[in-house]
Image (tube, rainbow, N blue to C red; front, side, top):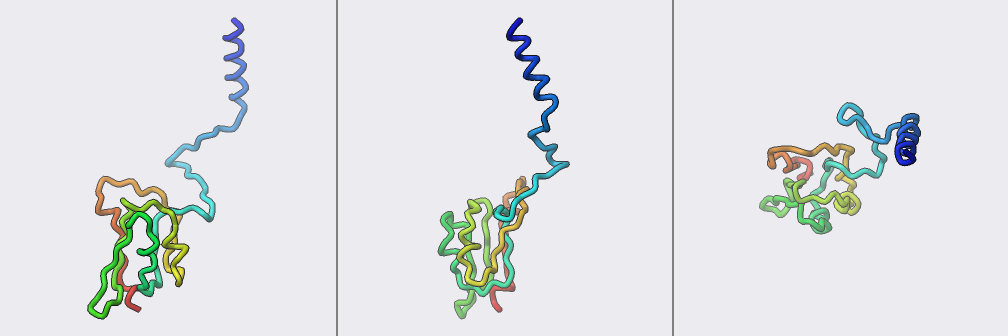
Length: 120
């Protein structure tokens, strides 16, 4: 009987508390400014520092005949979202967005290719 009463007491105590979980995907968690999500590139000068500091080797780039970087390939399948590419970019061209829902059935969707901005 004692165990039953303690169990009921615990249940009643938790009835009046706020819920701990969210009703995902209807309600989404508010993220802070330091969250590291999907990568976004704009204003890249093609220096290649991001590839050098990437510990997982998730960044590759293509150069033209003159040796200038013309496109970047970010492989989110390999990316560990450490943020080194963002921190060490001399032009702050790489940003990490708050987008965290990256689940997909097609691996090709995890390849982010940025072109155009690298040849400015």
